[in-house]
Length: 473
Ligand code: NAP
Image (cartoon, rainbow, N blue to C red; front, side, top):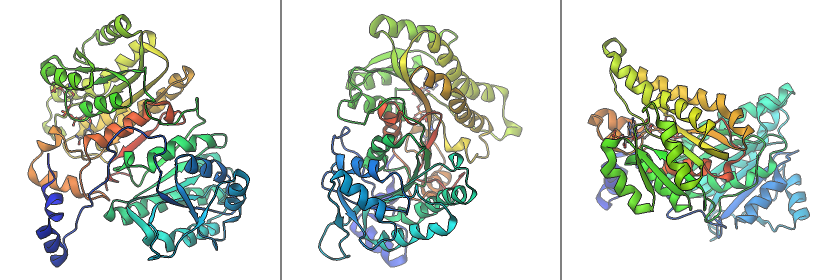
């Protein structure tokens, strides 16, 4: 569904009217218009900074330079020493940050390595670096912090400083969203430094346009890999609920990166499923996710034609909203069975037969499972359950060389949200740092990244793709 308000405020009349009476203007987000690129930051200026004692600068500079970025530094910054040493050792050229209005392109991104922070007092280095350069970030820019996860730190002062970054980034996300800029924090455990490269390629590019205010902790990567053109070539992917909406977009995006997609949907949606699959050269499987034999049917279908599954996306989901006091039991059962029970049963079956080694699973949660919504006790329970489930299953998948993660969409423009009454729909769209709903493509980009070996350092996590919806953390 079209966001008419956004379109209006970008028309010439709407722009003047919004300026005259002070109406907010949601930014037009720049989204990816094609597959992953080998040098996605080619021609982009990235301003890099570090705290004293920073330990991630080497892999950070290598990753940025490998992705084609023009690297800039603030020459007089106090935490510069590790950065300069790493640049010299790696023979990577860095340029001074030009003064505003010097005729040079603005910075596409500001990246700060905060891994060396050892006390709250040292947070001042973060302020000193980021505060003066905020105005020099281009529209649809990126702010990214790297840190060591607080849970991995023993020292009280260091742990406090590292945790402080979470509040900093969540607050900054709410400040910078007005021009489409995002702000995120990646927590890198010791030994996972090389995982920075693929993760940067997601967070610093238009593939993450609707991801902001988020903290993503990494684990030690299982394999090496970055998101490159054709990275999913030869992979077999199953997407449930693929006939329309978010599922159709996930199927299209996985196919865009080279995967062979089996789209599964309820038999009643066979027509839509056929159309989506025809567009991407995929295969349709008309099957209810709650069918008692769903896992064996999938395994036999896939086994016959493709050998096994590398990627499974559990996207099928429904709402049956009612205040709990009025909720009939069949509303409860249906939502619980489709949104949660089916995921557990299908995975259990596929773990016996169907998954290939290294299989990557992505489940669709929701901010409804994080912030909760009146009238959605059933839905909220399932979507929170998904978050617990991926956490609980991470080690099972890791033992097989794979991973399981979740993506939690916020308000996304689909048939599900188009069916909402006007008032709640309009509020739902605006209550986030980017003042607009996301598109199915935004979820599909995050899912496709998680489904790829490029996200091999992410396991058991839930990433919110919600424009930093104001509900929940
Ligand atoms: P949608 O437009 O309603 O699409 C869901 C698809 O799943 C439909 O094709 C539906 O088929 C299919 N499905 C439903 N029950 C099924 C079953 N038992 N077996 C197989 N397929 C089944 O929904 P969407 O908005 O794209 O949402 C996709 C996922 O994102 C859901 O898990 C949803 O909870 C989650 N999500 C969405 C939003 C949002 O703003 N849209 C926000 C947060 C989370 P039928 O046509 O037969 O029903």
